[in-house]
Image (cartoon, rainbow, N blue to C red; front, side):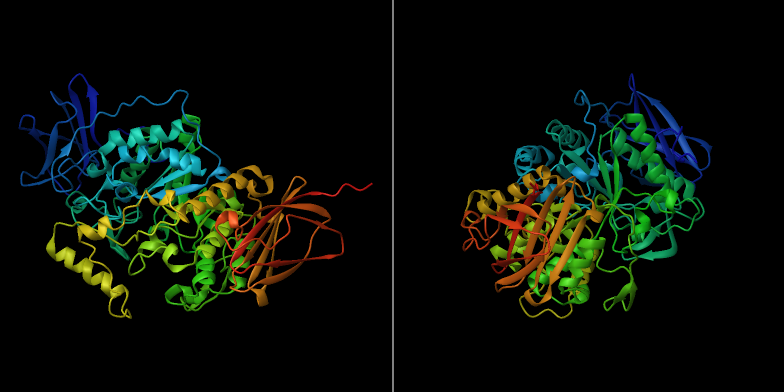
Length: 623
């Protein structure tokens, strides 16, 4: 079955050249729709009803930059649901946009997922200026770091000038405070010129509360389901074919027009769909067709907390066929081992066994009972390759949804931060770094908004307080509507040049370099790895092998020294890195630079507290 958008004209305003623009809108709730051109010259043009609730008009004398609204039934006026630009924010008129761009030649072909090292950033706080143009100036830092993919938090137009992006209400329009659509294209082109893939975070499970005018046009939402953010998007009720067309065209826009290499789909567990061919499956079919059409790799990465491998299983095996998905269990397992926290969902973690299972299976919970949920959780991901899992030790949610938005740099010692970096970058999964993590940024990342509705602002304040009912005095969340809260989240780009931040940055660079150059680390083959835990010592040993080469990763989450005994294959092992080395601003190395293991003999190693080490080996050649 072909996606519903194939052969259909684009929604919204499409500039046709020669001062002519086509307008197309789906408004089945309306009998009459007119285009109210408000600038540069005001006029009103009736649209033709063309069937299925659609209205269309081709208007002469309308060029890029022209501002317009839709007048509905001769009464209410609203922005275009498929607006490409909102120059006066969410409540103002939409603008016609030229969609041409001089792209790189030859075009960037994308990267296989196994080569992704993702760097998540929020445009507004990544730099002091908070724009795409300013972010371009930092791309060489990312290249030197070694990351291969830049994940941009949502850019859909949101109310005001500061927001995480998940309150967007114009999915097709690029946030004006970031620079708008042409600036995003320039940013993506600059990434591609540096061989960096671009992942765009898109939100198809809900829209924000302010400036959301889709209700005035048609049945975009349903009360059949409820999400944590209100009514669900209508993907399976009356009119849902056209709702799908809307969101599928949005996804196609980022791929076709903006040359995005992957879409990160927010909270797919909140996309409710009871149809035989679900929206996610139709999206996957559409993206596969565009891969063939554009001859480049395009990936779909789903965010979920469901631990459901069917998301990434192939359609031939009864799966949905997403290319990868987030595994929150990795974060939770590492975080609790380092911080000892037990509140909320962290009560389900905290032992070496949780991290051992996650490193082995991709999830910590594959059907075991979850205390937090009060039921069994997850399914075994049998036969699912390592690149199907995206893991992290920090991301916008895990940092920003803490009361104060504290990063790991505040919660853990310097030695523990290095240990977490090694656990992440030596894992058999796709790693994700949150902006500033690589040098131990101290700026917090609290939740922030700039809604214009005072009642909504107060509701958000109360909602944030209610999320953390047991806080002590002085621990209340900062005011999400305060500009100072937003400014406090901006990265301090002087820190990477200061000690010990510069040493942590150098460690991240070296770990990423080793990940790329040591074949057992580069090949994300879970079936060619083995995890041993030493519960008394709070230590783990991970063996990963490929094509005759082998890597040994040692992780000690305990504060005290740990003695581990391993049965290793006969080989000579070379130490590539030990996090407690003075070179990495540590107290000093404890492990030998080289070691030789013999068959049927245990190798005994003594590790420093809160440390990690990496060895690699070639088999011993027998005489």
